[in-house]
Length: 550
Image 1 (tube, rainbow, N blue to C red):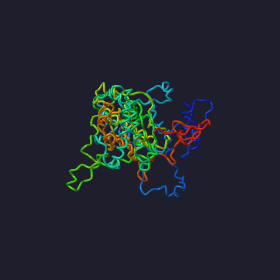
Image 2: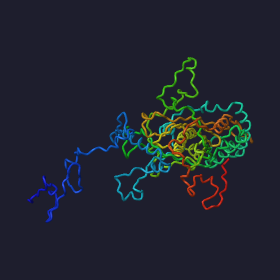
Image 3: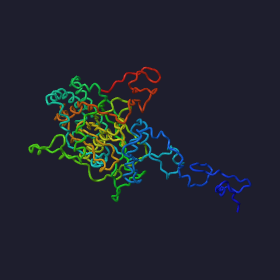
């Protein structure tokens, strides 16, 4: 055994771990809080502060750094529990709130890295893996979809009629005067397609012909309303953005699903809730947008939106028996109690990037959809396979999933995400028609944070969806028989509904000032003006003036 030389008053224990060489070196010993880089062991003196060391005086010169009450950091719950998921996502939402839209989209586009997959297989994915959401189509040929779409979007159907108070802005005399001016143009449009409608009195038999005829009737009706009303009475018609053949897509997460053994899915880090990607079948034929949103149908503090809020008591006994127009609790069809898994209804989980398409480019000043008119391109095929009654029921399901998808997509462009909840309701109107039968819908989106358990998020979305209404009975001998004025009234009420935002309402609370208006999809020299409003192209040539569709 080697002799251990002594240095000073103590033995140098660092030599015990030195290699056996002819030239022995000793690392200087530490005293007090002094440390060395080459010491291979821990010394108890490392954890003992030198009593002669004084605290710097600057710590006492900033009284604003002190509080009257002690502040402790948030206690992180146990990992891979529902409480831990809520804790981490709320923290991520606060960090994501002020980021630009591009970074928000990229945050949700890729799934977390899977540690079980070999790194060589992830190089082409940039060390990421795609989500595999269930593709939810707008108008599929599946029977009885309304309850499932209600659960996926957490939507309650309030009534099978449009809210009367919401469309009471138009008086009976004014509405009658408008109808007198638009009846003849609508009849003319129907007679122009009389050969088609005369041979399809019972049911529409051709999808290709149906789309063409329905679009002709829609154009004739909206053009007749534009000519019938005074632009001074409805100034928002000057500011409406009219789009043709637009798309809609949205991605979100829904909690509360169960497996085949009725066990709730575990909310852990990698196995979250169901991922859902809405993809609209076909295109929206007409889309009208404005800079201001539509006013809410009911306030967000209503018992319709939040069932946990008790309705206000009615003192008058005579009024207590009459249902109110704004909160008809007796007519609410609540969200179904069953948990619908998309895989049980034929929907497949596809591997692709989540995307949001509200029907316009990012940077467009008109970011609020007021009315959309859709022609289901496969209505005849669904009617032949499932029957006309089931085809009409799927139109109601399309109104639910289409209204929610449009709310989520435009909410993303406004700065909201599934981690940053809506601060105000977003209302959109929808019309579905095959030229003869019409379905009207008013949808109010109150919540998009559906990853939360229903017990933690009492808010729900609302929908008013009418039953199918026939515009006319049939065409005979060059005459339109049984033209329905109620259908025309619904079209006029929804088309002329003026958007307006509450005074002082911040429409984009999660987008810093000034709000970015650079187009996310198309950029020319990084200009802050939307590409279709620029006077010159990227090559310097003049651009043709933008002409909206009318």
